[in-house]
Every structure is written in structure tokens, then in C-alpha cells.
Amino acid sequence: MQRQGILARYGPYFDLPAHTRPVTLLEGGTPLIPLPRLARTLGAGCQLYVKYEGLNPTGSFKDRGMTAAVSEALGRGAQTVICASTGNTAASAAAYAARAGLRAVVLIPQGKVAAGKLAGALAYGAQVIQIEGSFDDALQLVVEITRTTPLALVNSINPYRLEGQKSAAFEICDELGSAPDWLCLPVGNAGNITAYWMGFRQYAQGLPRLLGAQAAGAAPLVHGHPVAQPETVATAIRIGRPARGEQALQAAQESQGRIVAVSDEAILQAQRLLAGEGLWVEPASAAGLAGLLAEIEAGRLDPRDKRIVVVCTGHGLKDPDIITRGGFAPRGIPAELDALRQLLGE
Ligand code: F0G
Image 1 (cartoon, rainbow, N blue to C red):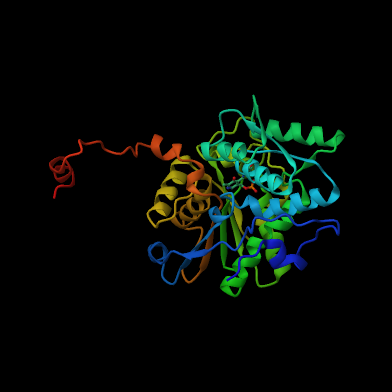
Image 2 (tube, rainbow, N blue to C red):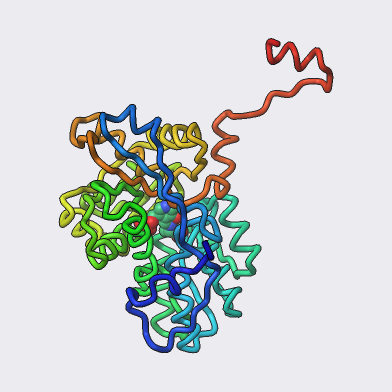
């Protein structure tokens, strides 16, 4: 199949201004991968799929929203795009700005961005600024500076980001023939869950129940109040004041779903489980599966005869350090056949 970007594929479904000038890296069209082995362990008749968003051009789902936001910004005559980011938005904004010939400025929390994301943003030529503070502090600065300057804000406060991100819901419906019973996904700044819900409603192919998962140390939507100092191994969702929090809660409620908190240990366990199926995703990306397993375990979600889609939002290559730090170090031996035989027990 000829690859198309999401704007070409689903154009009429997006509410974008007439001045929009498409900037694309042929994002979207990511695979919906069945996990029959894992599904069998969950319950009879359960069908489990991963929407593998790490296969987008910059390695995360952010590219769906970024093609829309940067296309609009370019058409409007913006020269610089700016965002706050835990890493993936930064890399995506940097890539699409480069593609459009625009300048990108990205603000990131110092020391809390995974190596693959920081390197990406730098490689695409963004001006990367480290804030001595959290993502939430960085977002506040970006919002304030864009009030009084012509810099184009491309965080998910920008409505065009959500327009583009709706496309993942369209793709899932197209592939399955209708919406799944459950959609499980990580929640950070809460733009993605909001966009999925908009997308499923608009596409009118049935509605899933939404299971959003926040990291336990960064779960403002579960606790019902902002978290001043969010902390989690899943740095992508290390967010204490989600910009789209109210909408996310409303989406979860309307769908008869919910937003739950999952421990870092459960997130890393789910990451290992996915890797065991050949899918290496970054920690935050495994939160949706962690939430699903915890809800099944607690008897609050019945997976039997259900079609369940778990959204894996970012590629494992984004955060290689978490694996090597986790004790997965290779064994060293001399370059000798005997040593190899002995090690392998052969
Ligand atoms: N998964 C990954 C890999 C992410 O990078 C993010 C958000 C999320 C999930 C959560 O999505 O914010 O729409 O609820 N990353 C943002 C960033 C905050 O700056 O890259 P959300």
C-alpha cells in the first residue's frame, strides 16, 4: 500500500483552517498487532491488539498531531514553533519544523528526558532549552511567552494537535471494522485520550470504553488534584498538572471507562511482557497494558469475549538507559570457543 500521511488520508475529518499548508513525514498508518498468546492468558475469547505508535517517523504518536499543528502554523506564516515537552513532543516538533523550514524551540525538564528523545530534538536542529523545573513549569513558560510573541505553540493546548491525533481512532476502526470494547492508553498531559475520544465519536463506528493509566507518582487525575512534584520511571508522563485534564476525565466518564494509577513496578513489568512478544516500547507506553492487567486482576474489568486495544505510544529505542540500568547487562567472555561453549552449556 502506498504510504500516505494522515492529512491526505483523513483530510475531510479534520477541522483545520483553509490556510493550512500540509507538512508531512508520512506519519500514521501504524500496525495494529494482535497478541494472541497474551490474550489467551487474560480470558476466553479475548482479542488483544497493540496499536504500535512507536513506528511513526520520529518514534511516537506525537507525529499525528504535529503534522496538523505545524501545517497550520506554516500556513499562517509562523516562523518559529515552540513547545514544552517530556521529550517526544520535542523530537516531533523539531522534525516537522525542520521539514517545513521553520525554527523549533523546545523547553524540557532538566535531567528528566530520555536519551533518544533529547538526541532526536538536537539531531533535527531544534534549540533545546533545559528548565530547572518540571514539565509543568516549562509548559507554563511556553504558554506565557506565546501570549505576547508570534511564536506558534504546538503543545496539545493547540487544538490542531488533537485534530491530527484523532486519526489513530479512525485507523483502529478501519482495521477492526468497528471500535474495540476497550481502549487502554497512558495519560500524561491528557491530550491523547481526549483526541481518541473525539475521533471515535466523530467516526461513528461504535465507542470503546476508555481505560487511561497514569503513573502512581504522577496521577493528578486519579487523586483529583495537581501533583506538585510528580515522579515516575515513565518520564514521558511525569506530569502533575495536565493541560487537558478536565476533558480527559470527561471522556473517560462518558465512555463508561476510567483513569487509574499504576505503579512503576507494574509499568516495567508490562514493558517486559511486551518485549517478550517482540514489542519493545518505552516505559510510559507500557502503562496502558499495566492498567489493563491491574484492572483484570482486581476483577474490575472482564476481558472475556472482548476486543481490547492497548496503545503503545512510543518506541523502546527512545529510552535505552532504562533497560541497561535495569540490570540487563551483557556477559563478557574471552573470544574463545571453549568459553562460549561453557557459558551456553552446550
Ligand atoms: N506516551 C508517551 C510516549 C508520551 O510521550 C506521552 C506524552 C504520553 C504517552 C501521554 O500523552 O500527554 O497526550 O496524555 N508526552 C508529552 C511530551 C507530554 O512532551 O512528549 P498525553
